Every structure is written in structure tokens, then in C-alpha cells.
Image (tube, rainbow, N blue to C red; front, side, top):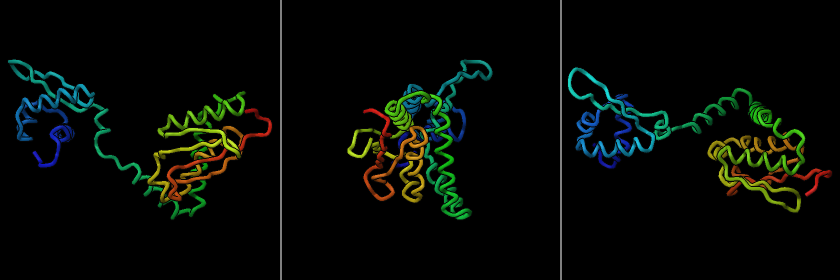
Length: 211
């Protein structure tokens, strides 16, 4: 057992390396008691991170082997943001800022195409409400409110913050998406890229819409 590391995480890492293992084998490898390991395995199974399966080898009672579930993958460190930054850096070096602009324009268009059918025939306010709700379901804390210049859409926790700090083109996805789906002009007031605490956009209400 490594000082400063939780036994729970060490059990998960050992199962990641070995694939399947018994409580006794895990206890021996980690230098802890089998009862302590069984308690961790019980909790991990309850949390949906580990699954147990009996396996018979010869005579006697079958051994109970434990393995990770697909859900357990989320426990291990991920570097998606770092990879995205590396890829975008290569795109920029190959094609310049214009290439990045094109990439994010295509991203916005692809997302718009996936939901625009659900907005057909709706009035502006309902379209915008649904678009904002869709943005929220994508993992952002977003809200809208009426402002003096239009409808304010504020995103408090950008899931792409680290990437946006290096590539401001990331911040163009939301306004392009809103504009494509509502037909309204959209401007950005605040930006995490500019070290503001949040991103905010003003959606100009069309002259033929009603509040």
C-alpha cells in the first residue's frame, strides 16, 4: 500500500491492471486484510464501479472474482482538454486562424442541424428557450433574462474553459448556434477568454417577435 493513496483507488487501479481478481489476491498485493478489501469491494459494487462473478476451478466452492465496470473508467484521469488543445494548435499552425474559424463554424452548424427540426414553426421566444435548454443539457450552467438591448444569455461554467483561454474561437460556437437556430443577431458581452467570470451574449429580439 502506498502512503497517501486511498485503498479504494488502489483497489480500482489493481483491477485495471489485472482485469479480474479475488479479494484475497487484492489484499495480498496491497498488503491489507481481506476483510478491509471486501468492504471496499462491497462499496465499489454498490456504486456500480465493480462487478463480481463466481468462477469454479476444480472442486470446492467457486472463487468470487471482481472486475471493473464500464462506469469505472470515469474514475481514472482524463486529458481530453489537453488533447483538444494539441489538435487545435496543429490546425492553427497548418491553416492559420482562418482554419480554426472554419472548424468552429462547422461545429456550430453540425449541432444546429441536429436540433433545428425540433424548432420548426415555433416563435422566437420558444425557439430561444429550447436552444438555451439544449445548451444547459450539454453540461453548462446557463440562464437567460430580458435586457435593455435584447435577451441576455449567460453561461457561468464553460466546460471548455481551459481550451477557450488559449483559443478564443471556442467562444464563437454558442453565438453561431443561437443565431443559426433563431435567425437573430447575437453579440458577446463577456468572455471567459478575456478573463471575465462568465460568458454572456445578447440576442437581439427580431422586430416581428413579441415579448
